[in-house]
Amino acid sequence: MPVFFQTYILPDSLREKLREPIGFPIFGSDDEVSIRFNRLAWQRNFKKVITVGDYCSLNLPSNVKIFDGKTQRMSVPKGLGYDLFLENPAGTIQSESWRIIKEAIFFNKNVFVEGEEDLLAIPCVLLSEKGFAVVYGQPGKGVCVIESSPLIKKYFNDLLSNFKII
Image 1: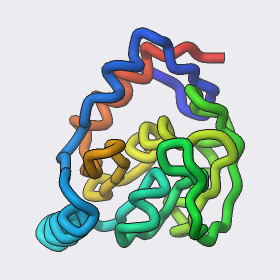
Image 2: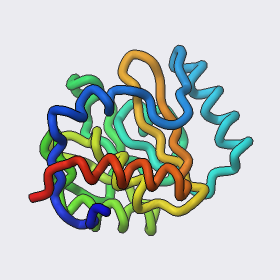
Image 3: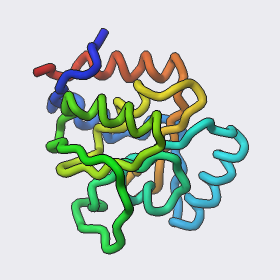
């Protein structure tokens, strides 16, 4: 069982697996994604929504936004306001990420990430309560919605146990 609040390094062997959609995929145009996400959020009545990535954070309503100012490695022209700052190099989940994400979720704060936020959906799910939703982007397709539950947390714990810990 992984121990939170440590630094995790993504092994090359998991890169392809993490490109596969996890959760409920919502694909289509920006408008289709927005309409279908809002419908799903209303139907599921999520307690809290956490968006990870600029596309999701700019286009979908959420309580917590985690972003790095880039979409597909291109700078985003309009920025989002943020309360917390985090340094997180690509391919990692830095030890400080856990504390900052926990604070962001508890106090509904936005987080600007210097580096890359892609893997931060993992601590978002593991630190969230049952009934929270974590939404992340699928480049060129749309988004995936992960509803926090014991089963999905076990999946992410198992996944994280294959990362290198430093």
